[in-house]
Length: 90
Image (tube, rainbow, N blue to C red):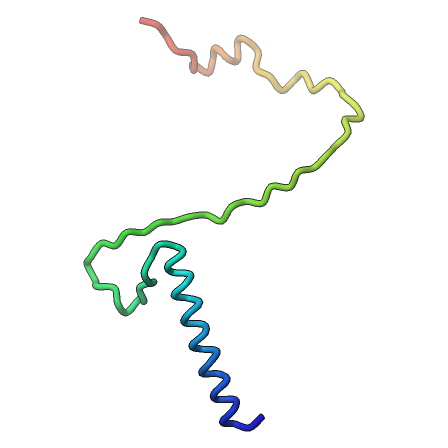
């Protein structure tokens, strides 16, 4: 492959990439993505943030034992009252 053929191949790939980007933009509902240089300072633009979906992996397990938990983790009635978190009906 000589330099001219390589250059033609690169140009064809760039053209194909632009076509795929245009198709993707139509599928996503936007005509095109604005470049940073095209944004006008001081003008508000809509911004939609979306997080990628989290993968859900179904797993199976087998319960092998059950044991009683620690008793010293809860609050006693006196400790709960001392926090003052209960709502007072007045």
